[in-house]
Image (cartoon, rainbow, N blue to C red; front, side, top):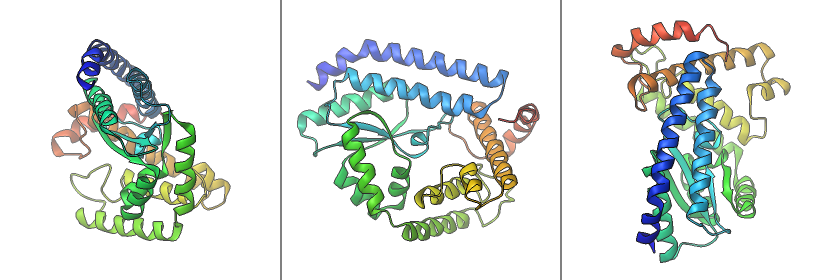
Length: 283
């Protein structure tokens, strides 16, 4: 069945790949004309949502299963060359027939040009993995249902929230941050910084968001300001810094044609010139 399904998908996959290429090129044109981060980040996420949903239906995946966006993709943000992180949620472990169907689905996603990082788990397996690995626990914090069983996804969301210990989560994220800082020599002043992982980069802002979300304090800087955890001015400053780093990462991906997050010497003058234009805009 897998071979027959894969063969039948080929014309559709070729069409989808062409469509994705054209639509991604259009997003870049729009971004270059008026640089708003949402044009790329939300725009690409929406395009990928469309193709995954279409392929899921074409593969006739079971109604009791679900496909879920996790990590940054779950947040509804995809940089130009970012991986697409997916959770394929099943009510029971897959049998041989289901494994074949899953292979066609995942292979099809790669064929249309998506670099997919995926896991296939039941709800129980998700909770076990989250308890053992802070990275999995964090990615599920921002899980978003794409298509499939809303009931199964609701079960995951409910049981995940019940199992989440905010104090333990905070301590684990703090340790993770300390280890990450050590890899970058504990300085935000590197000559070739990583705009995502270096101290002071996007990851630090994301960490604040994860902890706030885990604690039920909100999902945006504005939410934190409403709760008077930060001032309105601080919320604005955080958003401006976040926006600048997002522009920087977008430009690096476009400049290099890959998921390059390091501001290497070879890129710095080109990026500086183009950011002078980007900084004229506020979003």
